[in-house]
Length: 74
Image (cartoon, rainbow, N blue to C red):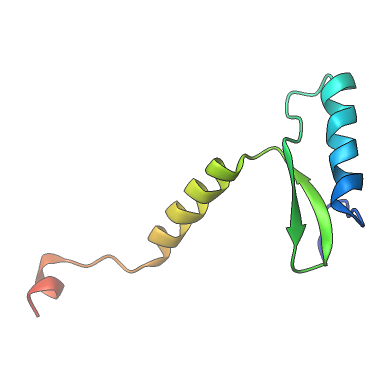
């Protein structure tokens, strides 16, 4: 289960984003919604899809073991 605020529908989550964009003075305002496969609910994020993809790509690259020149010759 997630510790983020769940929304039953994408529309409900989008309405909160719309409200926050118009009335919030926070530095980070959610930009989009996403469906969470762990809790089967919608959540808000301030990260764009491009930022998310770049972060995931970077994290996946870090998970791979680094190869030395000696390993490449084998």
